[in-house]
Length: 365
Image 1 (cartoon, helix red, strand yellow):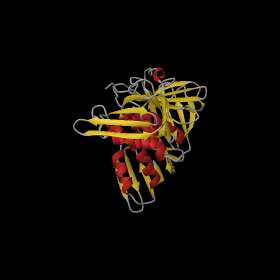
Image 2 (cartoon, one colour):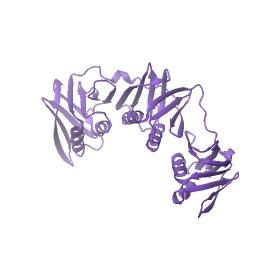
Image 3 (cartoon, rainbow, N blue to C red):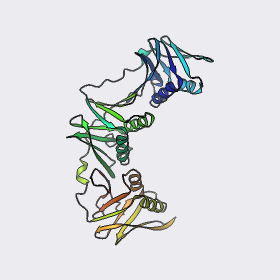
Image 4 (cartoon, rainbow, N blue to C red):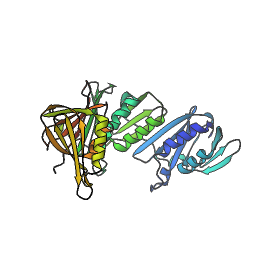
């Protein structure tokens, strides 16, 4: 292999691939990045066996070839070079990096030892505006479980039907669902691992593109973001029937300013019990009162002006759960629905379209 590349584009590609590299794996080859020519481009790939990522950059290819190079060493070297352009010259197991004032040689691994990257079969394709998908993913992630012993809940439910996309996440104590319109793909029901979603968000942040293509196969999903492609296994299993816990109506409905509510909850959370983060919400007339107390710390009461419909109400809620949701919810005004103190609390943005809802289960004490 013999190619010439711009240092800044090579460094970006190495950084993208390095996120999946683990030097702790029992398979040493997984600590490498596969570098190969692809027509008039250079393609870099990495994998941790659950996820694989490939990214391309423009290059002047004089001789085709491929080699696997240790990711950490390659990243440290390229990051230290101030030159504009480099030549990469490689045989089967060695790569020479040559510039005007630098000549380095890195020991590599045969490209044939690198794991074969997955290929999707029986695929369906769907496209989204990148910022819309980013926003929707972030809203749902607020409720996704971090317990990997329950893989189904440590993922995002992804469903398309009749031009509608539904994303949902839950950890059994809270739930977030976002709906949006889409084109193509037909009917899809799958669960995307949370790590895959997080890596997709990192790609969106690093690639300045307006549109993302999602390709879904029988057991894999792929996100194409600019010059990069992420491929992941889908989570096996059936997602819980969460629709039944979303209240169809509420006895008490309040509207309030999102920022003022966030501030009030954060102040009260300082006084909340550490084990439950519990705070008490009380709705009376035009006020929402938030109380929190802990015997060894003290107590606090904060009041937020609201617009109320229905009867007075009271409910105990985990402060951390509500601030997580308020930090990602759309709009400046939020609508909170309460039934009984033991029924789920709902939070929605005040919009004309009912496309986003968040549910929090109450505390029983």
